[in-house]
Amino acid sequence: MTNSISEQTTAAASGAAATKQFRTKQRTETTGVDTKRVDTLVTELLTAAHDIIRRHKVTYSEYDALKSWLIQVGEDGEWPLFLDVWVEHVVEEVAGADREGTKGTIEGPYYVPDSPRLPAEAILPMRDDEPGTPLLFQGQVRAVDGTPLVGASVEMWQADDDGFYSQFAPNLPEWNLRGTVIADDQGHFKIHTIQPAPYQIPTDGACGKLIAAAGWHAWRPAHLHLKVSAPGRELITTQLYFKGGSHVTDDIASAVKPDLILDPTPVGDGTGRAVTYDFVLDKA
Image (cartoon, rainbow, N blue to C red):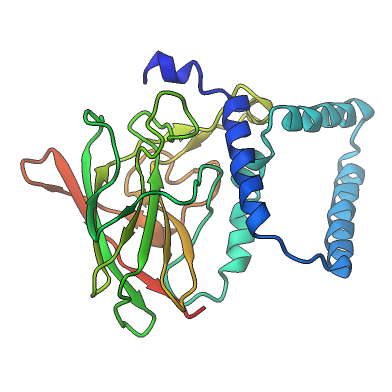
């Protein structure tokens, strides 16, 4: 891990980038507000908080510590990180409960739309000397009935071999390890990339203080992020992990599912790995 990157990849910088991306997304995904729904959800959330206070006899010093911490989360710009790490996996679980096709999981805070479009077999944008183990990720996109989905979109992004994401860490090319591959006339795709590394979420801000205070670890297992879609089909957002990898069994974001674990095999002279994973999309 290079000092030039690690020293500058702060919670505040990462949080600011995540907040900016989220606000851009919200401008294009506005929805109406159902006041009855808001009343129900907020009332139950507050009732649960009140119950915790009563059951655990929360003191004023603990309450003041919570208030101070909540203020710092905002000042550090870490609300996207906090919600995506500790809350989103349950929202996704509810949203995907009736899905017949491929399992989804959290999007996380590091998604950036409009990545470069690439052909069905492509090298993910990367530096000429990109470090890491070469990985061929290939598969097919199909409907639930097995029909190949022609021209399906396989949007992929990932951390590099040091655990950093482009546009969220300095000194990385804008679209490093980000791209949108368009599957062929049989729904097949082949993506040449590198195997990502596990990484710690930023620990120098408010979320790091919570982790330290609770005695938790801050690690996410290595994973590939994907959004897979086709006309008339439900978009699937998911992450794929690696069998035997660090923190697959204790992901801080609780986002790992058994169906999402890859088991790549050595290829060529053994310096690279390959894995096949198919996506099955429900009707929209």
